[in-house]
Every structure is written in structure tokens, then in C-alpha cells.
Length: 351
Image (cartoon, rainbow, N blue to C red; front, side, top):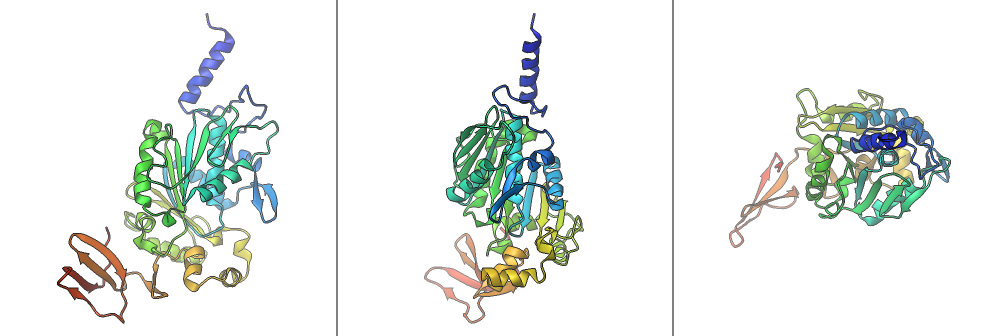
């Protein structure tokens, strides 16, 4: 007949296998981990300027956390310095503390960028008795907890990892072949079933809405959702769920989130924030719009931003279709030797 201790151990292991959060205090750790994420986050610290401060969530971060708890697939289009990746990293850290079967992976532009997120997570815990079982720039594991891996964005980055619960693709629009990396990483989540989550987070790059991230965000939105109109409202501080925060579910089940500096309780009270940022960081107008004003509809062309649907040059070469920005100073070109035909068009191709 099983003893009370054996029955308790059986129940704990069954709960962990099912992914149920029961707030277990591991026998190898003296730290008691709160099961409520907001409480857990306030027991963590983050770097702010020249000091570390408790991670107390701002209102827009509270809303983002609610979306993470509700939807399995999130694409977060943000301006810089809003702490989206830090929040998701803290969320993954919390899950790893509560479930020793947990496995998460962070993919960033390169190993250096991914390792910086690892460093931020390693500096988070302030709980009495907390200990790391393993910590490095490529993997962290709390005593009695699960693993978080940190990898560069390569085609095979997640192939060799054990069954993965969560994937964070950070600054996705700056990753070459992001679509292939996404396709190669998601099979590692098959065993996690409906408990798998993926977060695709980025500011917008020079590719604008022609890049993979821009296409993913701009396509498949339901009738009545004009994402450019939503962006314009957010720029005016008229977001649907806060001055600089908005979200909706697209036709394929993705939760699409807009995060703008107007949602930040400090930035939003700085007079002429954009002009000050442009001056302090020495940004061009185009950089300022992309990095701090959700400038997805602007593309770089001869150092001038052209609005979406301005003419572009379609180049057909055999079966390959590539896009070159339209330059009105250059003539159209037909080459019989290479069978290349260049044609001006008013509508860009979507592939």
C-alpha cells in the first residue's frame, strides 16, 4: 500500500506531466515561487538606467500578459524600449520555475543578442533561497525547474532540442530567412500540443510591409480591421486598449499586438518625445518612424521614404520574381540576352 509521501509524489509528477501549475516548492530548492505571475515578476529585478529595480508591470504589460495567457500564437509589432522581450523572458522564467518538464527557446538575430536575453533572465531572481542548477549564455535551469535555451537564428537552431513548449523569435524582422527559421523551429513543439506557444516580436526593418514580419502582420486581418488605420490611431494616443496599445485576432488565429511608446507611463509624458529621441540618438526621419512610430508603411528608396503602393519595379527573370524600388530617374530596361523584362507597376507583388 502506497504511503502518503508516495501518493503525494505521484500526484505532483502527474500534475507536472499534464502541465498543471500547482506551485510546487521543489525539495532541492529553498525558494518558494509564487504561482501568480504579477507577484512573481515583482519579486524579480530588471535593469533601469544605472540600477536594478523591481519588475513592476506597467498597465500595457499587464494587458500583454493577459493575452499571453489566452492565445497560443502572438505577433507583437512594437516600438523600441517597451520591454516586450523582457516580459516574455520573465514569463518563460516563471514557467521554468514551476514545471521541471518545461522547455523554452529564445531565438534572436545572433548568439550575442540571444545571450543578452539570457543574462537579463539570470539577473532577475531575488527570491530567498533561489538557486540556479545550470546557468550559461546558452541555457539556464533553476534548481528543480525546466530549461530555457538561447540560440542564434539559424535554420537548425531548435532541431536538436527536446520537446519545446515556448518559442520566442526576437527582432524577427532583422533575421535573414526568418520564414525558414520559423518553419524549422515549430516542429519541435509538436509534443507540447495545445500548451505550445510562439511569440514573434519585432520593430520594423527597412523592408517594411514587404518583409516576412510585415507580411505576417498585414495579411489575413478580418473585415473591419484596417491595421494601418489602427496604427494611425495609436500614434495619436487613441489605441483600442490604452493610449498606445491595441490587439485583435486575425483569420488564422494569430493574436496581433501593437505596442507604441504612448502606452509607456514615462515616455508618454516627455514633451516632444519623438523629436527629442531623434536628436539624442541622431536618427534619420526614416529610422525614427520605423523604430519609434510603427512606420511599417514606409520603405527606403533612394534615401526617401515612399508610401505604400507607390510604384515599384518588378523584375521577372525566368520564374523568379524579385522586387526593386522604383527609381523615376532610371529608364525601363529590356535585355534580350538575359531574357529579363523590367516593367513599372503601381501595385507591389505579394508572395
